[in-house]
Length: 419
Image (cartoon, rainbow, N blue to C red; front, side, top):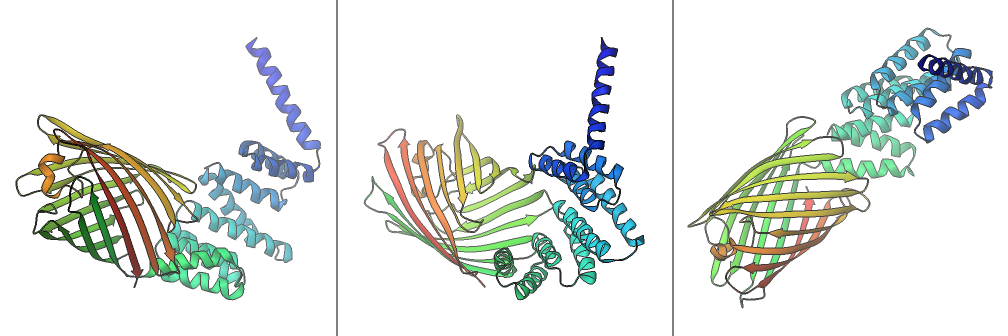
């Protein structure tokens, strides 16, 4: 039976091949394009190969075959085919047809590098294409995108400026140029104001912070000074935060801070490495350390983030060893980008108890034994390509043991400018 099955399968394969051979290449190419739209890349590859068996100079089929391997994540095969194609075109007789095909093949080669995040190679290939086709704006776009992804912002700005000079109505180039202009800034200054309402207390809390950020290609440093008021207490806090890119997949967050009063921890620090599992999934694990006048708290934390188009799903957990056991807070959230990373609305909710809470101040002894349910609603908006505003509201229901339940309502707003 197995032999009979193999014979039948072989005849079916031969029948399909003969059917493809007998059909007109125009029909086969249309079927290959349809297969791509349906993401049946293997089918499209077979159809393109059938076309090329009959007509090796069917340039559209050769290019489509290269793209299908790339879309099917077989970049090695795509690279080999595009290199072979470029070598053949270099030896071919130069006419209008071969020049047009060479242009499309060089664009294809550049896109392959960009899609693989080989940004330096993509820039080199785009420059090589511009030497032969200086009026082709797609090379400029690809060079600009690769430079932007590689944090070469001046080169990205130059590329998008040239595109817009030739085509002022190019909306994609204008949007990307705004991004490059934003990221090209070396400094950012901001001010943040927070007002916390305690439903069980006649005294609320006010906090104002000023911060200055410095950006390098793979390193960001943020310095922040905060001043807080509650009852008769006034406290200052100085903080430094940093983000360091270690590789294409790893980056590291760190924090250190000092305060002179009871409204903040006397000393704080933290360290958390982040790892990109895929282009859309990121995980992290780290710690925070808080020292209060009479208490110390170690907080261990982990997070996971998933990007889905214009949506980002977030989850984070905190664990604090507090005798005789552990205190835990879990948080989930969702962020909608409208329409890009600079403009979004978000919703977070969580429950549990953790010492890593801005509201602890003098009530640390009580709240460390408290359970809470909280919700955070906020949004961010970028104005022009220099200003950024953000607002967020927190409703935190505290349930201490012992003690009466109460709520903390926090209103916060921040304004930043790129310098």
